[in-house]
Length: 406
Image (cartoon, rainbow, N blue to C red; front, side, top):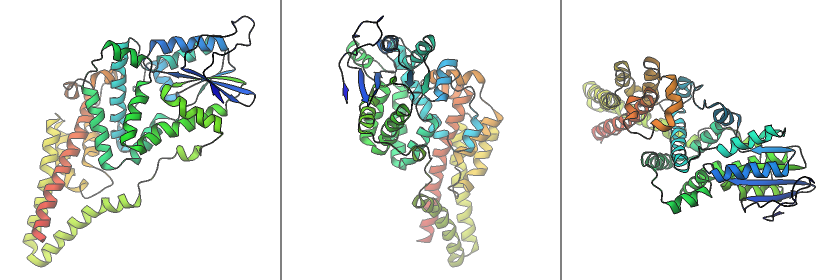
């Protein structure tokens, strides 16, 4: 059972009630009590509210919507410096990394207009707890698992829509009126963005919001203490309240698992190379080896040239352009690795990003010219453009070979 009533304090040195807003909800779990503090991740008012609640309530534990990686990033100001870019490329996680950069940039620029950086209220919760000697629990799921699960659940069309939406938000500077600024100060902007995307893509909402509501609730339920203050984004409060009061639980092992590629997608991925190879063999049997050789050569050039040109447009290193030309005809026949991953890996190896670029990427990514100026963003640009070039080559090559068959 939860209520919006102002909380009574059990310490004689404190007033009997505190003037909390509706952003604070009490949830009773038998003899235990959880105060859900719903915050906006870029709101100075939320920072003050968090300090007020923790100082007044003096709970046995403070839970925050952070995982260890995000906490280290906020507290040490080294969000990306420890990132092994080549390892990310090997694991084919560049697309999720790009999405993370874009979301971080959007939220950071909104925070700049509001005068407070994203996550300040979560960091404030840990500071106040440490000042008062209160244990802190980091209760969120690893952000890398969240993003990889989200990406894995989306169709190719939904992935394209998501990247287009986030790219648009990243390059359009948020011009907000005073009324909009006031409204945003009272809301969790990132959760609102995720909610809007979730309406168009329900599987995305399930992973980014619903699963994490259950995960956070489970972690809080397992935390020791009769009184707990949980500081979370406002968009999570309703779902967490429902999960806590209903006693429902989620399979923690399941929501930590990266789903495998469905068999249908694997078969579809191998269908294109199978059709192309079979078509060239058929042409050879029906029209002769010369015709088969001409079609095979056309396939090679149709894939190599667009991919190499796309890499050159990204101002890639000459070795990267050469790698694009040589790899494209073969990567297009294998669903295991794309041309973009090959070119990005070569670019990162021969022209590695500078260390300082990892700390400024959230600002740099919003300026189009920086994608060519920054070594880090150029790796991502090479990945995106050469992937597009590879797709163009597949369509051109497939159309020519299939037309020869029919």
